Length: 397
Image 1 (cartoon, rainbow, N blue to C red):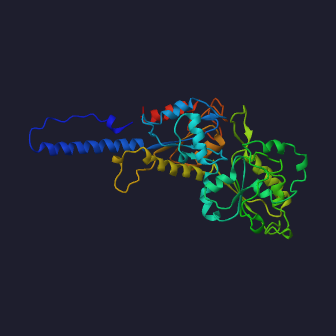
Image 2 (cartoon, one colour; image 1 turned 45 degrees about the horizontal axis):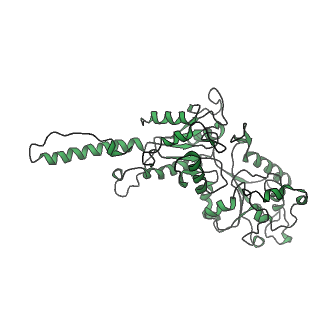
Image 3 (cartoon, one colour; image 1 turned 135 degrees about the vertical axis):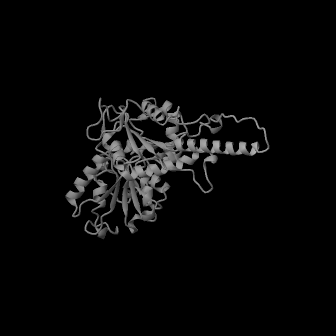
């Protein structure tokens, strides 16, 4: 809603010389009052949308999502309401995901509106910027980490290519030929860009669901296990099980995490962690250590709040800003629209004020009543109903 479309007022006819100054004073007070009121109303809330099961099922929009999102923009295409996408999914850079969402949902999405499960890994850049790290998961994990600024990020496939005959069953796995022809899969025999034999891996980042769990190049077999047991006498510094153990950093989600295009819930990275931890602890002297990222970690919600504040100035008028003021203000309410009580609702509850959770029935959750263990603040059928509720509650037409 543009300011010039909302102002309609009149003043009495000017009858003396002092009147122009009175007019300017009255107008100034009126404009100041209107701007302060508009600023307070329009900057008091923001929205975070989960994607799978809320806005999309696979690549198909659901729950009236395109119509719902269009209501958050003005006639000129600028944001009227700051919002972003908060998902545990990932595997590709945020810029590419923003383009995909723009095409699927019919609105203009910018990269800063996309927070994926691995987006929080940016906070570790100072620690690992110039260290050798391994990235694994579906999509293009090494590309993602490189775009975050990690200078020595290699994929699990690149790293495994340094070890000849690492998989004794490789000759019997005909699926490798087919996977090699799949453009969505990274090449299996990529030569690493760094001399991994002269440098110790400092961390392993799992940026998304491992797509070949137990098929020889990612997941728990055999590379993760062999990597942790290679004897130092082979010349690979630090790979003795007695001398070295990498910090494996996960963005951990629940066991049954998303529905996506499949008609029932599926196993996600939570299952991968359980499998890897079980095998690792069985063969290794020290237990597996990992750090969890992604929802329901409250840090993710704090990060989302910070990003939403950065989006505020993109739609505020310059009249709103004092000199040196960025235009961003604290939120009275932040709405989390989601489909998974044990991940999204739990995370919003742990984050506390100003988060308000809205649970839809188009994804993981299909219950008639609210969830028993992690009840949302509101339960609706679709994301369109959720947006209707929010705009009505915030008095926006």
